[in-house]
Amino acid sequence: MKEVALLLHNIRSAHNVGSIFRTADAAGVSRIFLTGYTPAPVDRFGRVQKDIAKTALGAEKFVEWESSKNIKNQISKLKNKGWRIVGVEQDVRAKDYRKLKMRSKTLFILGNEVRGISRSLRAQCDVLVEIPMCGKKESLNVSVAAGIVLFQSRE
View 1 (tube, rainbow, N blue to C red):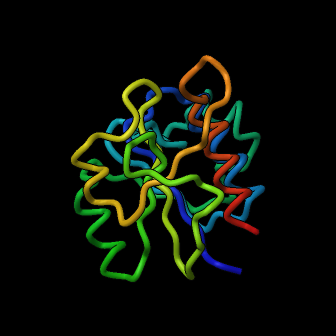
View 2 (cartoon, rainbow, N blue to C red):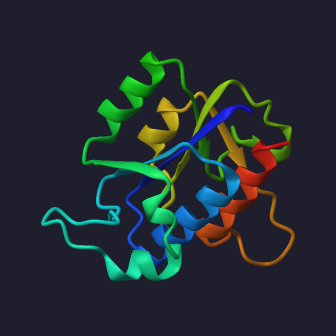
């Protein structure tokens, strides 16, 4: 099976983070990188974040994770280790997520619930993918989008 990891950048909602941990566990994600102000399952004082634990239902204990403020350094390290960086974002360069050909090591980046992934961060991605929308709303909740791309990546 191909190795898949997630990078969650500047996600503000602990509930979204917990939900993504739960989905990541179900989809076989090897690791989650938390960057910017994305909350971690345990804060810097060693306290459990109850809102993450509430929605993760224990998955935060099974999926390896690490927290870092500097996303550029994190991406550079991963690229140097052979990871393909895939941004999940609406963009003129983005292709349909169903057309993504998986490689041995793929990192999906998911961004802020309102602003998504910044232009400068999109420029660091090897590929951009998006989930086509059929309704009037332009986007999905970040945790729902994570589930869609993660389970598609398993095929």
